Image 1: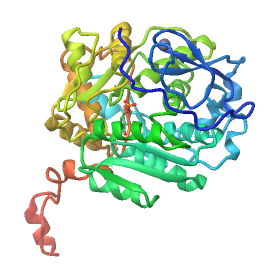
Image 2: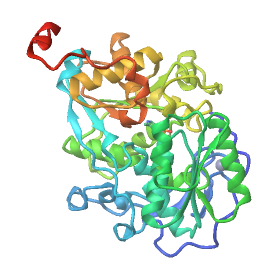
Image 3: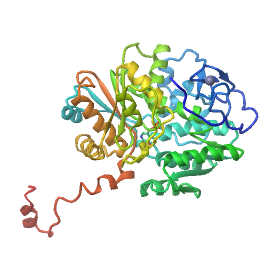
Length: 427
Ligand SMILES: *Cc1c(COP(=O)(O)O)cnc(C)c1O
Ligand SMILES: [Zn+2]
């Protein structure tokens, strides 16, 4: 497996964080060569430029300790790179979102036991509040002056809101063609929303350049990415806890950079190692849009490397043409007996409507992708419909109204009379 190319190791934000700043985290470890680096604002291995990941020395952690914690991600603080007193610093307190038994959708798709982990109810209505809360803690502990990100939309919303609450300056960068609601949802929280003429990969490149030039800027998914990424583990912890401390058989997860998928797997592995759940096999599936499916393409072709693509899909929150964690997604889905599948924009729209009409959940295009991919996985025999399955809804439909606005609307426009209503044939 070859490492994704990362051009430069960023300059440190400050000299040394305080004792206990990162909880039980002990180092940054390279995912390629295992070389260890001290905890700091670093994201690339000084030896091989491979991506760095947080390494821990966990104490014994019990279910009871976790259950006694707050009803947000900080109930898992012992497993995150955050200080023991994290609850006392202002943040948006995301997580512990509902896990819904989806009997109607299950019946529709022919899946015997189906659950939806609904992350659309987070503070800024996407799973990004989880990762941002962890990045904010790191930015604070590293004494960053500016909290920033390149974003496909939801991340910008989460960064801008968390920065407002924490009283730290935010600057968020988005592709200029982003959905209008996602632009407003950032601009309401920050004066510094920067729209860049280019796609997400262009925005990301610009952010890396700024991170290298400007002192004291914490770009959540660039120079503090190792801390940020750990926030996604909480999705895995919650799924297991809400199932009664056990792992599901199958999980379907949308893939943009691929970070979330890899971290749900990491969470399950940690829970097994800590003895918090029974060890058992589980399959992880990735969901992409055909208009930006570089990981699905590599999966199907049997390739180990990802060929970057130019995104062209309504699933803008998944529109990363050069996914940083794509190779790890391939590894995990193959190793676990899962798959990476992709669907068309038409199928994504149908997926949004299907989830809404079966479960009363209005998801955005990413969730439409996940729902539609789940359907396709069953139809193609890749997902076993007799096994317990969880699908993750990562965002809210009010942010991508245009995707379905043309397909749903008033059944009839009538005069305000009973006869006119009767004439519609609805009753
Ligand atoms: C960012 C995002 C994803 C994917 O996240 P990655 O960790 O980059 O793969 C999925 N769904 C929504 C709604 C998102 O905003
Ligand atoms: Zn390395």
